[in-house]
Amino acid sequence: MIEELIKKEKKYLANVYKRFKVAFVRGKGAYLYDINGKKYLDFLAGIATVNLGHSNEYIVRRICEQAEKIIHTSNLFYIIPQIELAEILYNISKGYKSFFCNSGTEAVEAAIKLARKATGKKEIISTYNSFHGRTLGALSATGQDVYRKPFEPLVPKFKHVRFNDVENIKKAISKDTAAIILEPIQGEGGIIVPDDNYLKEVKEICEKNNVLLILDEVQTGMGRVGEFFAYMLYDVDPDIFCLAKALANGFPIGAMLARPEIMNKFEYGDHASTFGGNFLACIAAKASIEYILKHNILNNVKNISKYIFKKLEEIKDLDIVKEVRGRGLMIGIELKEKIGREIVEKCLEHGLVIGVVHDNVLRLLPPLIIERKHVDFAINVLKKILKEY
Image (cartoon, rainbow, N blue to C red; front, side, top):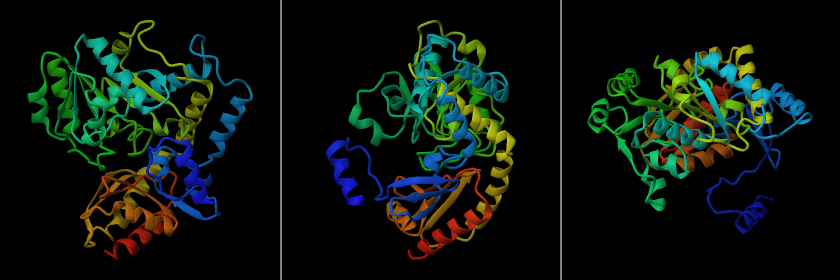
C-alpha cells in the first residue's frame, strides 16, 4: 500500500518533501499507528507541535463542540474565542497583546512588519544557522543558505551575525536597525543552546540602541523548555515574540505578541489574515492552554527532562556521538557522521519516531505528556542502534 501512495504523491503533489516510507492513520497519546497497524512511540510530536499528545480527548471535544456551532465568519466581525484566547495569553505573558494568523512563518512576517512600522527603521538583524520560515520575509531572516540561495534576491535590509556572539551584534547595529530577531534556542539549526546570559545581554544592547528584540518562540514556546515561553527560562522580556506549532496542539494557528505600546503602532489595514484567529483555532488553543494548566504539564516537563538527560548519559560516550544538548524536552544528539536519516529509518523499524536536521543531529521532541517508560523505550532503541556505528 505504501508504494501505491508514493506513486500517487509523485503524480499529484508538489515534490517538496523528502518523506520517510510510513503513513500514519491514527494517534493516541504518545503513540502513532501506521496503515499496517504497527505501533510507534512518537518522539517528534509533529515537529514540536502535538505537545499534549495525539487525539487529546479534551481538545478534540472542544473542537467538535465548536465545529457544530460555527467555524468561520472572518475578522470583519468580533470573534469571542479569539478575544478570550488573547486575554489568556495576555495574562500568562504578563501584558502582551496578540495578533493571530495561521503559522509560524506568518507570525514572523507580522513581527517584521510591526518592527518596521513601530520604529520607522528598516534593518533587521538575524543570526546565521537560524530558521524563521519560508515566505520571503521570514526567509530573508533565516540564516541558512540552503533555504535562501534558490530564491535570491530576497527582501533587502536583513543582516546576519553569529549566534551566541554578543560582540558580533554590537558591531552589526546601525542607525537604521529596527530589530534583532532570535530563536531562544536554534531548532532547525541543530538544537543550539546559547550561553545563559546571552539573551539578557542582547536585550541590554537593544535597549541602549533603541532596537526592538523579537524572539521566535515558534518551536520553544508552549512549555517545550519547561516554562510557557523560553524567554521566561532566560528571564528576558522581548518586545515582540512569535508563537505557532504547539499553540493549539497541532491545529493550525500562529500568533505574534507585542508589548501594547508597540502593538498599538499597527493601525486599521496595516495587517490582516482571513483565517487568522478563527473559531476552531482559538478554541483549540484555549483548550490546549487549559490542559497545560490543569494537568501541571510544565512540572512534568521539568521532571521528565531531568530523567531523560540522565538516561542520555548511556549514549553520550558512544563512538558515533559527538554531543548531547538541549533544554527541557527539546534535545539534540549530534553525530560525528552525516548518517542521521539512516538512523531515523532504523528507529522507525524499531517503532520509534525521531527527527533529524543537517543529517547529523538527531532531534528528540517528544510530547510533553511522556512518562519514564516512554523515555526508557526510546533511549534503549537509540542505544541499540548507535552502538552499531
